[in-house]
Amino acid sequence: MTGRTHLAVGAAAALAAAGPAAGLAGLAAAAAGGAVGAALPDLDVRDTAHPWRERLVRASAAALLAAALLLDATHGGPLLRAATERGLGALALGAAGLAALACAARLSAHRSFSHSVLALAGFAAATHLICPPLAPYVALGFTTHLALDALTHRGMRLLWPLPARASAGLCKTGGVVDACLLVAALALAAVVIWTALG
Image 1 (cartoon, rainbow, N blue to C red):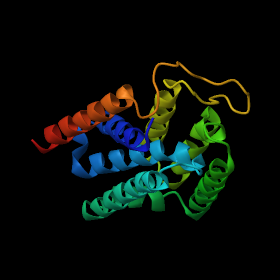
Image 2 (cartoon, helix red, strand yellow):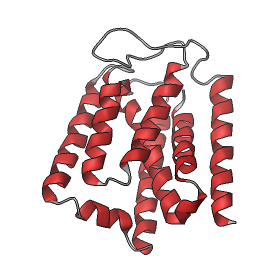
Image 3 (spheres, one colour):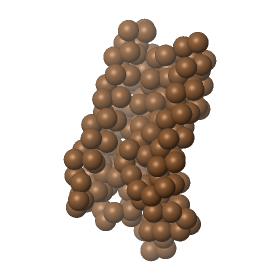
Image 4 (cartoon, one colour):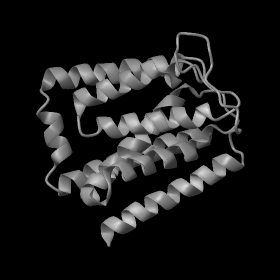
């Protein structure tokens, strides 16, 4: 699937999981966590015909996270409190884990390590060490990425380092299903946000 579809589906799934009762700051944190989680598997994308699209997806996820943290700060800072309560050791371990996983993902072949259950567990655990409230949304966004890529013909090495590829072979990246999922995700996100504001 395309990066924009991954981003939208990850954010929408996290918004739906949080629900309108989470409030604006809670929804922002959920959407940011889902978007970041959905963007992480494609850290392995290096040789692409449209590199600016990948950069835009990563920049969008980072911008959502920055906006969520800013909104969090204006609403009493529950995310910041959760992070500071972890202690310096947990924060350092989590940050080191995220850095190591990001490097491993960046160096791996496309749809191998970074698209595996092992990477999902690692990124979720490292995020939990830094900020527990964000971890479920990051894990959910990551999971949606894996689920969407499993629908494609190319598939991925879900059980890396085993060589077998998980692929339903139902669609292709950038095709009609990709576009429909993008529209559906945007509609779902709009409904959750509208309900929360209404």
